Image 1 (cartoon, rainbow, N blue to C red):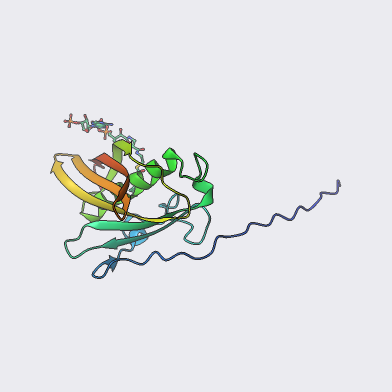
Image 2: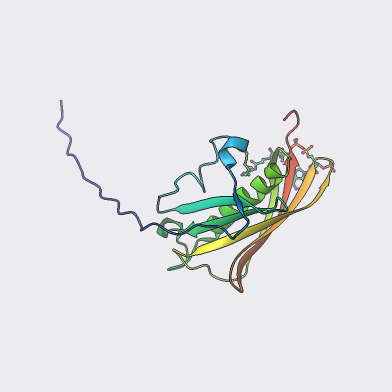
Amino acid sequence: MPKTKTERVTISLCPPVDLGGEPGWIPFDAPSLVGESLRFVSGEPDGNRFRARYYRDAEQHLHARIWFGPETEGPPGHAHGGAVAAVMDEALGLAAWAAGYPIVVGNLNVSFRNMLPLQKVVTVESRVISAEGRKVMVHGRIFSGETVYAEAECLCITIPGK
Ligand SMILES: CCCCCCCCCC(=O)SCCNC(=O)CCNC(=O)[C@H](O)C(C)(C)COP(=O)(O)OP(=O)(O)OC[C@H]1O[C@@H](n2cnc3c(N)ncnc32)[C@H](O)[C@@H]1OP(=O)(O)O
């Protein structure tokens, strides 16, 4: 039997980050609503890709604190556009679910407004704008302070039978 060489790979994790919400925000348990499959963005809360925590405010709007880790890099030191779009896909789709619409995302239009620095905690805010027939429109933006990093319009389509 051929001998295999054991390679030791050391993955150093970035230090903990503060994903705490604003006063009045209530933590939102996404897996209990949509299941454990929602892993791509929010599945590794201590990893080096994304760290995410969801909240709802008093008006039931969904918010997220998101940290873009080093594994989301696109332009040097900044988040990949696909990483930004992945966050929009998850957060805005989840906003529709949280508002009572079992959906998948049919169309996602993202405008990248500013380069998003890695290892920065940003906020995603979302609004369900309309619901007509099977079409649910959700708008959102990623920002920190006065800086808007991305805006998105997300057309969600309800899943028949859900
Ligand atoms: C389960 C837990 C999930 C929780 C996660 C939430 C966050 C994650 C969000 C995601 O990442 S979802 C994954 C990415 N999305 C997909 O993979 C969706 C793939 N596409 C599909 O499955 C189907 O195309 C879809 C269900 C969206 C629509 O197919 P259907 O055959 O059910 O519907 P149909 O094509 O008849 O369209 C219904 C209506 O929606 C409209 N529509 C559908 N797709 C559209 C589109 N892409 N753009 C514009 N309009 C669209 C369509 O024109 C029509 O309008 P009208 O009723 O007015 O005629």
